[in-house]
Amino acid sequence: MLSQLLTFQLAQLTVPQNLVTLLTEAGLKILGAIAFFVVGRWLINFALGLMSRTLKGRQVDPTLIAYTRSTLRVLLTIVLVVAILGYLGIETASFAALLAGAGIAIGAAWSGLLANFAAGAFLIFLRPFKVGDFICAGGVTGTVEEIGLFVTQINTPDNIVTYVGNNKIFADNIQNFSHNAYRRVELVAQLSHDTDHKAAIKLLKERLQAIPNVITSPAPDVEILEFNLAGPVLAVRPYCNNKDYWQVYFDTNKLIRETFGEAGFSVPEQRYVFRNQMG
Image: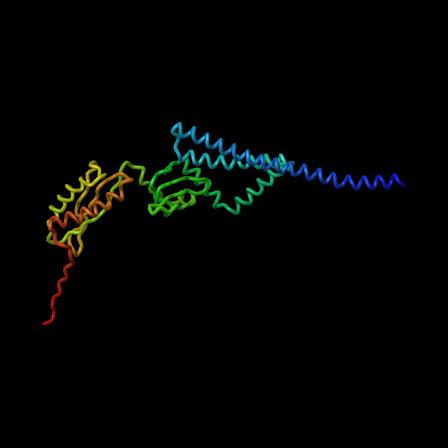
């Protein structure tokens, strides 16, 4: 009887001790997994930074570097998570199958997301633009800051960062203002009926060359564009580099105003004639 009582008491002591041991082991594994994750993330960032510096040193296009970095970051993070799950004793094969099934389900539900991913790959491969180009795409005009896995980051002229889905860009017209060496500024100048258009054209052509950053080849175009009730309308079209567009645009407007004022040209006005048909 005494021996049975002692056995029962020892069993009662063993259960809490086993529970403490299990909790201790689980806690150590969790702490190890956290440390594993922190170190893994640091190694991923270090490796990606090293890769970026190496590619920049070899003059690789920044657009391709940014896209490759984003892709590798996602893939390496997935590998790290799978490795941590294996360390914790979770069956990674089953997890991989679950992840694949979830990927199919998410892909069916989020077909637009996959379309953006595919469009991003095509944008990198076909290269209609690169980081730093000034473009108009997907209804947004601005400078390309980054081409990501799913969206492209564009900074508009009024300094607003805009994210546009890659598929929307790829499916729409793309205007790349930075691709060519120069672009044309298109303005108009209104003349009055009694102004000598030849003199006006000559004055503008002479003075347009003095505007900073207006290129000499091709030379600025100044010709009669159309006629309206006020008189002839001149097309004033200097050429400049893309980065100087707005400076040349505003300076040309001021030049038109100052040139016509100094020349004493009449102010354009619409003329109406009323005839009395009575009698």
